[in-house]
Amino acid sequence: MNLAHVVVGRQPIYNRDLIVVGYELLFRSSSFLDSAGVATPGDEMTASVFAGALSIGQRRLVGDKDIFCNADRGVLSGAVPLLLPPERTTIEITDSTQYDAELEEGCRRLIRAGYRIALDDFLWFPGAERALEIASTVKIDVRRHGVDHALELAERVRPFEVQVVGHKLETEAALGRCLDAGFDLFQGFALARPTTISGAKLEASTLGVLQISAATLDTSVDIRELERIVRRDPALTVQLLEIASIGAPGDLRKPMRSIRDALVYLGVERLRSWVTLLMLRSTRNTTADELVTVLARARTCELLAGEGDAAMAFTVGMISALDRFLKIPAAELARLLPLDNELLDAAFAFEGPAGQLVQRVIRAESADHSDSDMRKAITQALDWAVQSAELLELSDAPAR
Image (cartoon, rainbow, N blue to C red):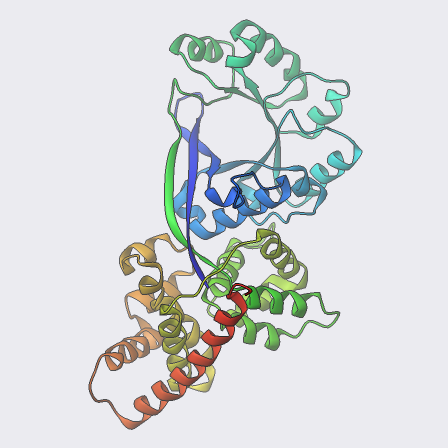
């Protein structure tokens, strides 16, 4: 189990009233470099980008604004799963990506799933008409082209009814001319420079990733087996609940009350997409002493809850201990985690039956005495947590 650090850059995108309507995510992470300082391959880096977005959480990154994000060819071919919210995400294809039949089909697949396509740093190329027919947005690099050429390029793409973004606007004069020319959106230093958001994130254990990969790639997926794997790994739990909270394309957001709820709601295909993303991350993992605390609290809550509430009690217990694991104050963590409000209120405000149970367990953890049922549950839970943590730590130990 690993507690890693991720830094994400973001630059706002403005409408014609100069109100922020979205952010382009600009990822800045040492995880994109190997031990020799060499950049990782494109698909692996893209997988790191999306995993980082899930780890920090879209609420913290962009609030209620739209997301603009560059994607490598692997996303468009389907090799790298895309798990950002479709109704709010625009995928940017850079001018360095060769537009061919495979890429066009990938774009159409993403559009069918609810995503929008932008042509980033757009240059006219043979066959550009086909790309413009499916794109919803064109970003024109004003610094690269110069204002006059950028305005000419904007006029050339307007018949395709795309939004035109004035990109890399570095002076008030360039911004003013693009406004006068009828550009739709605006981005650049003349408006705002990129800022960074940093945070801690949980990395899934090697064993957890391998086990859930095997379970989901099996022809007959056993939800109970998946639940058994996920519940031993806080990183897998948080990612699973977060992805489920995004919802499928076209679906309304549905509250997730437990790990099992999230597994059933996602379905086999989206579960496999998530597992593919985990496999592509290629992280180096270490152990963490706090893992036992997280697992023991979750298991204690489960043992003490009634049969019908055990699944939710386990999930709430685990979430309530993540502040110690991530070294983030509980109030801040409750604000940042993009999870169902009922889970967060129970875990951090101790509301409802599950919340009251968690509060009892937390008090018992530091008490010299407690009732016999509580002592028995804590002892059994600690045994289970130690065994689980040892398995995860052994799987992450470096080879000798």
